[in-house]
Length: 500
Image 1 (tube, rainbow, N blue to C red):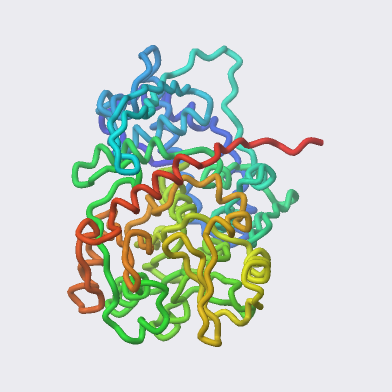
Image 2: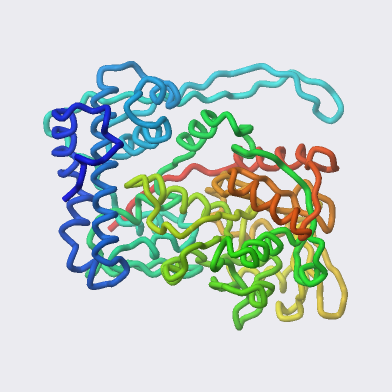
């Protein structure tokens, strides 16, 4: 079933350890459910037989590794993730960190949270004052389990929707091996007669269990990155604008995302991109697969209504290299599907993740209602929506611009957005948004060597001009303050089955 004998991952593990761990891994319910549903999975034609076994083998390898990590932390005191990673030399540090987080969700490991109160001096309204700040320490320890312990079973992702926290990214529908899940901008339906109860949808869902501690620990270990508690791990932060007139006509702010995508397509660094464009209903966005620059411009500008962008990833399997544009929850979903349950991406053709800044989004119906209630306008009269300097702004076909205080429109936002702590798309390769930059410019955060390379490439190609975000006003300081505010105000996720 799995070719462990030739697997370099286990070169430091004794044959007995490996056999014992593999045996325990084979009892994992996700592996068993996936293997036993082989016929149904192949019939769906989402994965061919080779892909099926690649996924299965990687799931077994990852679960085998987790069982070995569990044995190595048994009887040890509670430690920070970075400390555990440094103490286990048999596997890469990133692997160990992700393993501990998944072992926690499986019920083998418990998390201890310590809160330390620090007194710091801050300038508030021009005056220096001493304030208290909380610092959190997350430590992990193997549980003492009873003899009759049963590994936690992962519910289908409907529990996330029923709990009111689903972000409707569409990732679960793309991952589901038997096409049992259908996601729209407002709904999530699972065909109970088709669902094979493997829990993969729950595993990869950005709202099921948190990977934030794993992310922070992994990024802190990467010495090539700057780590900020407010905006995550990054290489550099800039403010920039497009130099191309055709992009200026369709841009929201600096036209950076469209410029980056044009650079990727023109230089054949990707074969296609996934983004959103207006549907036949103006201002109702729809996910779209674009493989040429002409159609790319249709995706320009911000659409404040949500769309299940990741639901069409499966349609892009024919392309070898793909870039995906999306909001923070989508970037986290893709990353989570890389970490769990196998440590390998379900879609290997995703080469670049371009994340958008997002405070919150609106349902299409609420965008219509907001436009009528606050501006007394029909949505079809709008040519642009924007958020700037604490205002929600609309532009009309007549040329008129109208604005209301941002506080007045918050009640129209999707409630499930209040469970997101990420403003700046921490999990992307490169993040883009307006906060911190002046009108006509966008703030840009490069988070990986791939993201930094494509920005520099677009600059060298003459598509973008930029400078450090710290050298302009309001600059990086404002961006970090707003990002910190979103983290502070994020609601905790509590998943509950609906009462019978």
